Structure formats: C-alpha cells, structure tokens
Image 1 (cartoon, chains in turn blue, brown):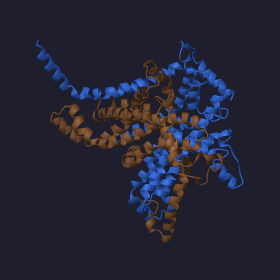
Image 2: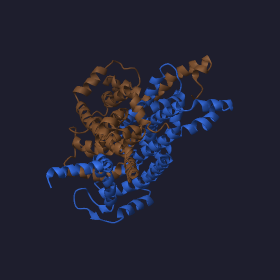
Image 3: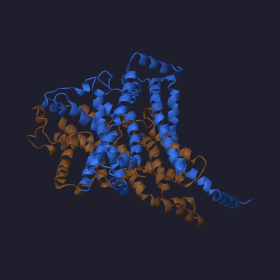
Image 4: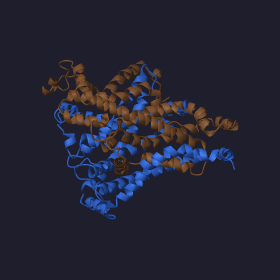
Length: 308
Length: 282
C-alpha cells in the first residue's frame, strides 16, 4: 500500500462521516473549557465537602461531619441559620422586581417625544457594576449625612442607621439590589409589550375590558415569556447575591446580613481561616437549593423544545 | 398598545404625563445624580457638612485629575480592559462553534449537552470557587489576568451557547441543506454560510458579555490580589479603603469605573437589548 492511497482513503472516510464527526469537532474546545472550569469543579466541591482542608496541607477525610457542624449551628440559631433565613428573605423580596419592572414598563410604554432616551436612562442602573451600586447606597443610608435620614428628618423621623442595625440591614441591601433588578425586568417587559397583539386589545375593548381587567386578562397572559425570563434571572440573582453584601456590610453587623453565598466565601477565604471543606459543604447546600430551580427551568425548556 | 395611547387622552393628561416623565427619572436616578454631584465638589464641602447643597466651587477637573494621575485607577482600568476584551473574543468564538454544533446537527446527546451548558450557567459561583481557585493556583495563574480570562471564557460559554444555539435554530435551514447538496464541507458551511448570518447575535453577545465581565467582582476577588492584575471593580474597594472620607474622589472614581459599560450600552443599545431579552418575545 502506498502512503498516498492511505491518505485518500482517510480523506474519504472523513468525507463520508463528516456529518457525524463535525459536531464533535465544533463542540470540542467549548466543551473542554466548560468541563474543566464548570462541570468538574461542581463534583470536586461535592467531594471536598467530605474533607477537612486548609487549602495548603493534606486534606483529611471526615465524612459528613462538615454537614453535621452546619446542622448543629442551625439548631444554635447561628451563622448558618441566619444565612439561610436571609437567603429566603432575598428570594421572596427580590421577586418584587418583577411587578415593579412591569409597572415602570407600562408607565414608559407610550410614544411621545424623547421616550426612547427615557427608556434607556431608566435602564441605567442595570449597566452599572453592583460594586458601584453598593457604594452609592451605602452613602444613601449613611447615618450622618445620608439622603434617607435627611428625608426621614423632614417628617420628624429617624435618624436610622440602616446598615448598622440588625433589624434593617438585610432589607436595606435588598432594596439596593432591587434597583438594578427592576431595571432589568422593565426592559424585558418593554420588549414584551412591543409584541402584544393590538387586535386582541381591540377585541378586549369591544368586550368592555378596561384598565385592570385588560391588564390581567389580555396583557399579562401575552407577556408570559417575558415573565418567565424575569423569574429566572431574578431567582438566580437573589440566590447569587454576594457583591452588595460584600461591599455594603461584609456580612455585618454581627453577621446579621450574611447569606449562604457570602458565608461560604467568609469561611473559605478570609481571616476566619481557610476552612475549604466546610465552605464546600455550604456551597453544596446553596447548589442544591439552586438545583431545584435549575431543574424546573430545564423542565420548562424541555417541554418547549418538544412542543416545536 | 397598552395602556391607552397618550395621544388619545385629553390634553391635560398628556401634559401631566410629559411633566411626570422627567420627575420620575430624577427620582429613579437620584442616587447616581448624587454621586455625580459629589464628584465635582471640593473636599472642603464635606468637612463643612455641605453634603447635599450646591458645590461651593466647581472642582470636577481637579477631582477627576486626581483619579487619573494620582491613583492606581488608570492601572485598574487597563487591567479591566485586558481581562474583558480577550474574554469577549474567546467566549463568543467558542460559543459560535458550540451553538453551531448544537443548533444544526441532530445527534443523540444533542439536547443533553445543550442542557448541561444551560444548567452550568446557572450554578452558584460558590460551588466552583475552591476547585477553580485551586486549579488556577496549580496552573501558576493565580493573581494573573490570564487566570481570570480563562475562567471567564469557560463560564460565559454556557450562556453564550444557549444564546447562539437558539439564534442558529431560527435561521433558515434550507440554506445549509442547499450548501450540503453542493458538496461544501461542514467547516466551510460554518465559515461562509452561517457565520455571516450570525453577525447580529455576535454583536449582541459581545456587548452583553463585555458588561458582565467588566462588572464582575466575585472572581476578581477570588482569583487576584494586587493592583497589577485586579480589575476596576476590585480596585475600587481598595480605593475605598484608601480614600474613605474623600467622598469627592470616591465618587469620581466610581463614575470612571462605571463609564465603559455605560458607553458600550449607549453605542450598541439595540444589540444589548436584543441580547438581554432573548426569548422574552415569542
């Protein structure tokens, strides 16, 4: 056999099987990166949560004792319990961004001079880094000069030290987070409103639907895709909340504004010591909570795919 | 259109609406306007407790000059660009290919691989934190821009694949079939037929990823430490420690840090919104 014949045979083999090989060649680089940096680390974290490890020395297998520690802290109403509770508060209150976004979108859904500029300026908070948002709101809440206290003083109330008070701190941070998130939901709804069928509105008008009735029975059902995406991004955003807490309070005062995402970071990578395994156990719990939502999202997507 | 078009309302309602728009905007952007006001005030205004009044003198040029010539800010900005731009290129390039593979070909595990990308894109960062940090350390890339770029490319590929695959699905499939009948190789179909059609998607993703990466804070803190490799989001916190009471400098610094994504958004608004609202209209 000559080398040339071999090559042409290979060539034709590749040619014949092109359709089945090509997708894997296209997938290879992206898949490799994603595997190494995302998929495998998830499993590594699961494994790591069974070890006691300071990040440097040898890791010691401890079984489920990291989880047991977390559980007992919970019973003690300690850090883990507070973080869980705050995560729940975030999850519920963050959803306010959805109706708030819809409200602003409806307000801006007119055709008057300059409205396009208004729409983009309203979207502004989302484009800015959460770090900057956090700084801005820290000043807004500042007990000595913050605008909030100036405002409260106007009504003879206050002063309130929002970020220094265990009762208010989490709500204060969530409020700051709602600002960009509402802007995001607003854009989703503005786009959705653009696609609302005018004939259905006309038909609704003929049937005597107005205002709330029109909104509830005709507009909102048509905004379903936008609402779905708003839910996805808001829930993920609520569970991922980290930047604002890190910037505004670093979990304080006395750990009262921690969430799981921040607590994990604190345990694994800060002056409290490098308890990698313990941190991984917290991350696993956060991941399992998130997984409920991820599974639901994927299931919805799957139904949609099959529907096509 | 809903609610009732304002043009069909009585004159009074129209005027009220027009008047309410700027008021609402002022309220909405109040916190930012306050920062803008802070950034042009002289330091003396803060020691004299003139926080919210008019600046006693306009010191904008001086304050911004301080930020640009007398702090680490330019370096952080440069770092941010050097992290963001390669990430955008890398993630978009990889996801053009994965999106093409998942959008065009029918093979058994297609949907599962697609779902893996989508699911991976939603995981909390904390579950990746320790292994990714460890991997970066082992590769000798801890505290380097390259370390951040590699991770960001990998992670963003999840979202970008979702986007690209759905975009490619909506393209007319006949084009590809026609090309196959002509005997054109799969790579050339990707390069000459599909890629040109993907331009709007590439533009949308580029602006979006630019903003995401520019604004990233968590990974910057986890994978870098010093001024030589930290992006501006992490930099601004050290800036904060340094100029704690110098509100005028902090404000100017924050505005400078926020500007590039804002500029990007205004220049590429149409694409940006197209990217964000993917799937929001059916």
